[in-house]
Structures are given as structure tokens and as C-alpha cells.
Image 1 (cartoon, rainbow, N blue to C red):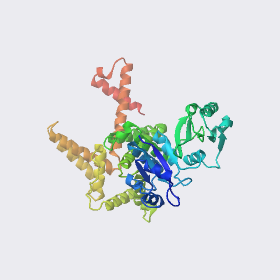
Image 2: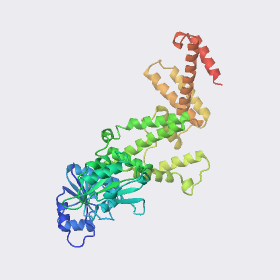
Image 3: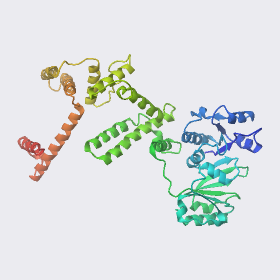
Image 4: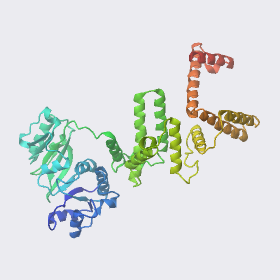
Length: 471
């Protein structure tokens, strides 16, 4: 992997300094925020070819973590320079992001002092709790661990060892420390080490250390979670996450959704919160895969569903009226038909749904355009018709399978006509059957036998007892 450096060129009056030009010309790739503007013009006048962020699939306003990932990925092919506005106009989080992701030193050029580099890299508000101490007088106290600490004047190995000893008295040995060291050709270099690692430094005359507060809250909220997934999918992230695509994860989406439903049915709030997190992981992971391919982002997903929800609820966000749940459903279906004008009524119904759910969706779509029995009695007549047709077939034959399908489809409509969800009704029956059968097994075990060893009459007796105990 090559190096990464940030070189400030914006606001320079006249030709760029020769030292700055040398740093730019030595890079394998020079990246600029935009193809136009003062930075791009300065480089063009100096005859330096630059890549705008647009050429990397980004915009000048793209989130800083995506810019960081693009620069890190580009550095796999050689030394990279990001030509940017100088301090204090550098984008917030760029340097700290590069340092945490690049796993190498990050150069900064030109700046006046290592303290300036640290303040710029970590966006430290000078009004915040900040201690700037010379290495010779460093003596941190436990109560200072929650403040930003900058140690200046780490001029030699002796002072580096002394700083390490003093820091070790109040910070864990693996607590991160950032070293801002000067470069022979000018500018500074940021390096990530630990309190223990400070002792082995060979610093220059103007080196400084930055020790972050010992209790730093990790990135939180939804944006923090999205960033976590982006890191997992990044060049130095998790090998398993990087190789996934939409198809390889399709079963995970189904499984996590079912596990969330199971938690809902169990009434277990803690488990439900966990399972909803797993479902959210699938959504964000699919969005990140698409973002990596330049197709869409999680912001597109959120914007799309937000706009759709508002559009399909005109009784809330518009002038329409819908006083009952049935009227809401009618409005929803009508809007969906308008959105998909020209498409078939049954277009878009996923064929990989569980069969009962698939039948319900198909039936509901057909009913939406008036393909419906007049009343419940008419559905009952159809059920009896399908039963008679099934009885007339050879048991186990293809014709019997076809008629059983017809009967089940009609029963689904019988449930729909009564406002009953056939999927949920069958799941409830399955749970009821399991409960009764387990009750039978327990009763048989108490009698010194098992259900596999008793006859059908005894099974029926135990079954009726189990039913009676449901109370």
C-alpha cells in the first residue's frame, strides 16, 4: 500500500511553492474535491494532472467517510495526495478518518506546527477541555483523562520514554496516541501508536503527541451504524462481508424476518429488539453493496420509502379522507394501481413468498379490480365444489394434487372474505398442534410409555385430555 498525504493548496497567491510542487509531483495520484475551482486551477497552471472526486464516483459534497474509503482504496496502487483547502478549512473528520483507516502514516503539508496538525486532524474545539503541555513538564492526573491532551516538545528518545512512563500512570498501555512528527522535506506526518508504543519513538525536534479522552463515545445512531457496515465492506474490512452480494444474502433476509416474527409472537421485547437489529443489518448491508457498485445508497432507500409512505397516505398528508382501516386499504391499493399504470394486475407479486401469503396477495390484487364472489355463501359453494372435484380424482395422482391446490386457494379466499389472515390462522393451528402433541408425550411418559408405543385409541384419549387442559 502507498502513502496518503493531504496537501493544502487553496488560497495560495501566485505560483505554488516549489516544496509543495515537489510533494504533488512525487505522488502516483493527486485527488482534488472538484474539477473546477481554485484548487483545480492552481494544479492545472502547474501542469499537474488531478483526479476530481467525481472520477472516483463521488461528489465534492459526499460524506467524509466515503471520501476516506476512496482515498484508502486508491492508495493500494501507490502514493496518493489529496489536494485540499488548508487549515482551518479542511473538511471535518478527513484526517482522523484517514489515520484510522489507512493503517499507515498520513502526511500533512504545509502547516506551521505539529499542534496545528493535531487540532486540524481531530477537529478539537479550542473552547473544549484541552491541555497543551510540554513533554518536560508532563505530569497528567487521573481527573484529566477526560480532556484532550497535547504533549509538545517530544524532541528525542529520552523525552519520548519519559512521556510514555508518565502517560502509563493514568492511561491503559494500549490507549491510542497519535504522533505528529516533522518530515525532512517539510510538513508533518501523523502516525497512530499506543501509550506503550510512545517509548520506542525516535521523534524529530518538533514532534507532538495527541492523547484522546480515555472515554470516547463510539459513533452512535443510525449514521454510526451505516459507517460501521461501510468499514466492514471496505478494503481493510471483513473478508466475509466484502465478498457478499445481493443474491448470497437473500436467504439471510428471509430468515431474519421470520426470526423477528417469532419474537413478536413470543411477546419477548428484548429478543424482538435484537431481531429487529438483525433485520436492519440486512437492509443496511444490501444498501452498502449497492453503494459500493454506484447504484444507490441508504439515503436513496430512506428517501424512497419516505416519499412513498407520504404519497400513499393522502388522508394524513393530503386532502383525502379515510375513516376506517378498510378505506385506508382501498386508498392504498388504488394509489398502487395508479403508480403502476400499464402493468398487469398481478405483476410484481413475489413468487417466492410462502404459498399461503402468495395466494392471499394474488387474491387481494384480483379483488381490487372487482374479481370477487358476491358474498361469503358463494365462497362456501366453491369450497364444496372443489371438495367434490378432489374426491373424484385418483388419490395421490397429479390430478389430485391439482385439485388440492384449488381447494387450498379457495380456503384462502374463504379466510380473506371473513377478514382472517390465512397464514396466521395456519401458524396458530400449528402452534396449537405442537402444544397438544407435547402434552400427549408428557402424559404418555408419566404412564411409563411413549406415544410411539400406544395404539390410536389411547392417542385419541390423550389428545382429548390435552384439548381439555387448554381451558
